Length: 394
Image 1 (cartoon, one colour):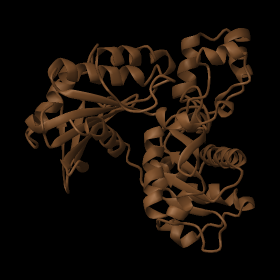
Image 2: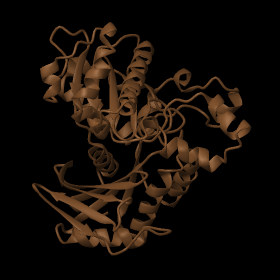
Image 3: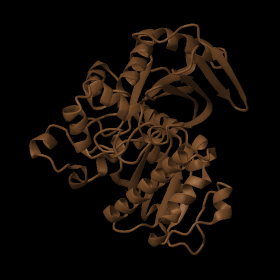
Image 4: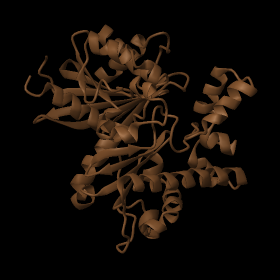
């Protein structure tokens, strides 16, 4: 493997790819730039931030069966700003590792086949990561690649927590709770340990609130429960996803109403959540500014379900010492945090309104029995760290 000093990360979502650029110094990865490709925009645009400078470049290619041309053009733009001949490896976020991958792996043909075999468990996210992996392999076959899995962080959960009340044979076939957003939770667990070791040693619920949203129960920094289960549809309502749903609704739609499976799938992933309840927007920022009752109801439902799920996780943990808000909504929307915390006063959580309005690192009062933190997450840093851990000593 080349002894380069750059490392790239690809964080593939269902409709975007975040690219991290890291410089390796003393076996540590330090971020020096970041990029974003939003596949919902036309023409495709690559947004690159390097220190205080940023640029937007339209891509001449478009998405097709594979991403070879998109990745090739992206590499071309990056090479204008970075010496890509010094790239040591590329690390990828892969949403689903099933029970097979409980930590990062170096990618080879066998591991790529195994990841592909898990596609049915994450049909929106897994294919995009695989397309990126194969595009890099096609363009730079000698370049080392690694995979970091969103599900791996939750491997510390007990079998009891992961089990559905379904026939045991289904559990043995992999129908169980896996949990997601694990890279984000891994970063928060480490960052909380750095900032507040006493809190990190206790029972903490982390709220990853963004377009996709979930909660994770941490005990001494290890995952004990997660609101997302078998799929990324589960748990709390999201921008366009429904969250927990009575399975009887699906039986009714597919049976009595005769709704096509594809139509139901599209509704659950893209027409539900904030956009479904409000009929206005999937973005909580828009809804908070909108005076209509439907917008208010969507926000209220979002906060009600989050508070309820935090209460459930406190039961799993046997108490609650801390709360962490992270991701786009969690880090930047005081109104959402306040509404959630107001419903958790019974747990001893008392919010400091001034600190909360300022997005301060700690938004609870000094007398609160539950300390509430606001901590920015960084999934790409975890991908970079895990990639380096694989190559340590080579």
